[in-house]
Image (cartoon, rainbow, N blue to C red):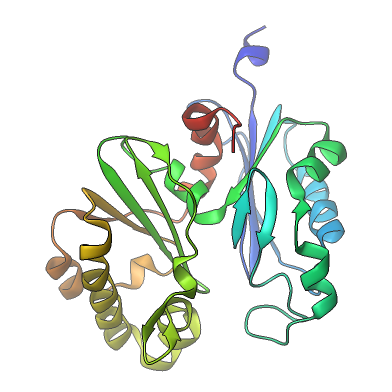
Length: 257
């Protein structure tokens, strides 16, 4: 009876390089070690669905599914996704056929059909944010990884998604290109951290947040000196927050996304 009221959640964080997944209870406790598989390319929607189904079969049975996906997602429908339309992963050649396949694809409906589970599909930064927001004031979430992800919440309520990563930040360079993993590797953590500082300072007058959460796999690489300059309203959160967010998403918007 208790399982019916508080089902286990399969949370899947879909990235450009890998898919991380775990099954968690209502308190966010893992019921098996989290798993990660490389993102397969080329990746039409049907292959992503099949990959998630295969992952689910290796983990304890869950009663609902939460998926975070790069790009713009509206009500579980993919408006655009940057990595999965490429032939070999981030920053490789875009395949027009994959662009057509993903454009308007109802991923939520496809996953419900394939898994039989109630499903939430949102942007990956939104899922990450669900795991960390306090629900007080305006909270901005920036995820630093393959590129830049973003989400913002007002009083814990998810705001309409903006693809901030595609906005120009310097001489036509987008935030995605300016702060993404290729530039971190090229510059080294020190110089890249200064870019993070400049980007955050430039966003202050745009959002006027009460709290900024820095997450994603590269947040831990931001230098201590830059973190000190960012101030007390900026906090670094663990990359595992997306998995916990898979549970909290149901509490925050109850599947409406």
